[in-house]
Amino acid sequence: MRRIILSLVTVALTFGASKTPAGHGEDGLVSIDATVLTQEQIKEAVGSNFGGVYTVLEVRVAPKGGKPYDIHYDDFILRSEASGEHSGPLYAGQVAGAGEVIVKRTYANRSNPESPALLNGMKVETKDDLGDGSLLGAVKKKVLSEGTATDAATGLLFFPLEKEKPKNLVLSCTTPEGKFRIQFR
Image (cartoon, rainbow, N blue to C red; front, side, top):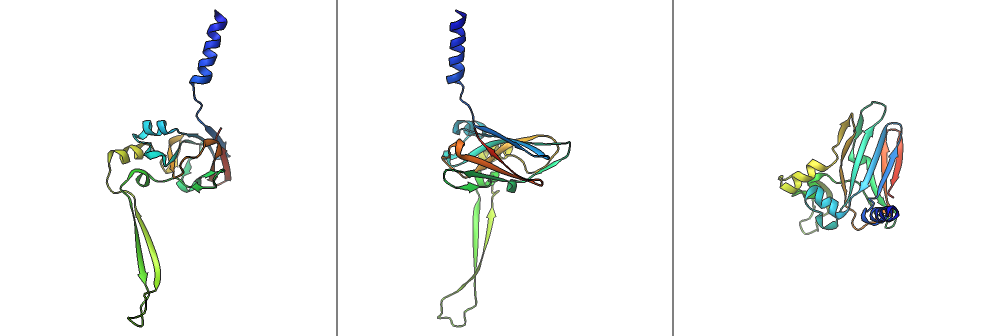
């Protein structure tokens, strides 16, 4: 009887618990743990999975040696070793806001009104915080905050990579000491 119960528990643990792909990396300044969220986990966390267009990581950044650590989105790049695509994380307003991109073109002066206008330059502005809908508010509460961390900080990072298998993903982290990579298993 004992053997049967033990076998049933083993089967339940093997097939009932799905393993969430996670990875770890560290250097002398910081320890970073990252987990790839499923579409269901994303929806549970913020109320939407955004149609599956984002790869979302739950990231824990822990300063080492009792020294504060500055968290910057520019220090993270998620790469797909299968497709070659890569991206940095998006801000909350870029994920769920009513953001917009404004492109302003400037043209050179024309010596002759009959000649075509020549493009002299372009300026791109982004406005990513227009309004605070409930989805944007939920994302803002859950994202990893940029800034100085004195204790471990945990939050979500949204990357515009869709339909990537976690085993093909690598998170590159840049610190003042150098770079390290986190692979997901």
